[in-house]
Amino acid sequence: MQITPCIRLEGVTQKKGSFTLHADGEFASGVHLITGPVGSGKTSLGEILAGIQKPDQGSIHWNGTRRVMLLQDTSYHISTMTVKEEAASWHGDSTRIIALAGLTGKENTDLFTLSRGELRRLELAAILTGGFDLIILDEPYAGLDIEARTWVSQMIESHTNQGVILISHDITTLPTIDMLWEMQEGVLSLIGSVPGALTNWNRPPPIIRYLLNQGICPGGLSRLDLEEALCRIPE
Image (cartoon, rainbow, N blue to C red; front, top):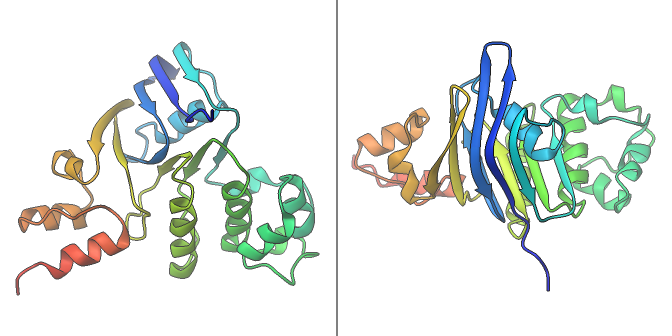
């Protein structure tokens, strides 16, 4: 019987200078969005969830097998010299990875001559096709055009049987979100399942705040959900 990936944090704390992160919560399969202002601890939480950092206190219970995190600076992921070598280093289908990233024909290209968007697409294609149980994506839309952002959202939606934790300030091209979380001054809080949780969002982004002020609650946070909600605003 296949075990549903799940990671649970109990009493997790991590101190960095005067800043302290506090986290309790459970992340099961589906797509989780973590929001919050810059400096609230989102990236540090992602690194703890991915096993990159260890908390100072608390416990982490994990019943999956493989975790991975896309860092904001994708150059940290690079371990080879060319597109072909980098795709192969992930031990997946390198031809498929390159094709999904839109880099067919650039197999022998030096990685450091790629644009930021091209490099991000390559690493995302490798991660999203790598069979990981838990995928943490920190600002995956940064440096991507609208077509590539739509591709990322579609790829995420194809992995809902896994756990995907999305850390993003850009909500204009999100995939379908299952659970909404918020970080405020280092404290993680579960807002709830989407769309019901949207009315409980302490600091919603401007477009959500505008819709709620118009008496309209979107059916979700995907691009289609937001477009449909905007169409319901009376003229």
